[in-house]
Image (cartoon, rainbow, N blue to C red; front, side, top):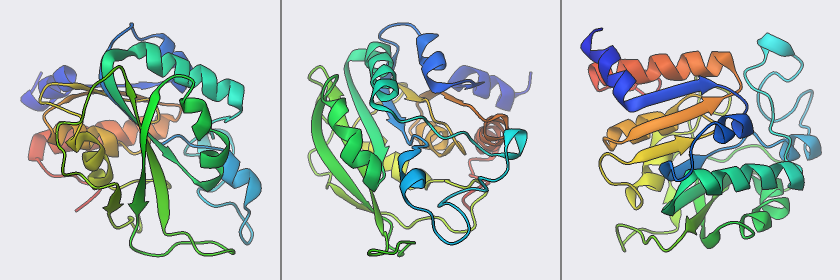
Length: 243
């Protein structure tokens, strides 16, 4: 086994799986911090722009689709949060991303499991789509299990990080966004968990912090992309998807 594959095996675990099934396979008190950008179905059910939906090529079914949307019913989301709570260590942090619709319907459920401490605004700098005011931001909910404090006291609750254009993955988020999540929550060697891996931006952020990473995604294409991305980064120190 060459050095890159050895480092990958030591630091990264990726698995093709449903998020809840994957979390159920993990032991109690396993991860130090969880970061997640779920593929919520709520926004796409409510907003249809032009001839298609907001992200992805949703007319392609089966293997042609990048990812399946997360059925974000209150019951399903509660099961997801309950497993996240069990898998996180007694004193740990959680960062959950929300679009406008999921924030209104699902964010209150987080309080049934975690202590919600703040709602962070991700300012994407560049304006996006929208009929009733064009969207330029998303939200990141910050919550705590136990009493763990942030590592730093100078971190703002508005993060000005430009969105990506012409990305390799339909909903690819900037690595800098996940680095901002980990900045106040991770120490070297900590284990970062992401049950909605996508393009693997969260994995690259964890590796940049010299942390270990475990994640899953329902899409085989996403897993293959994220795995190669992580291996390339470990080999060269450069992210092939954000040059």
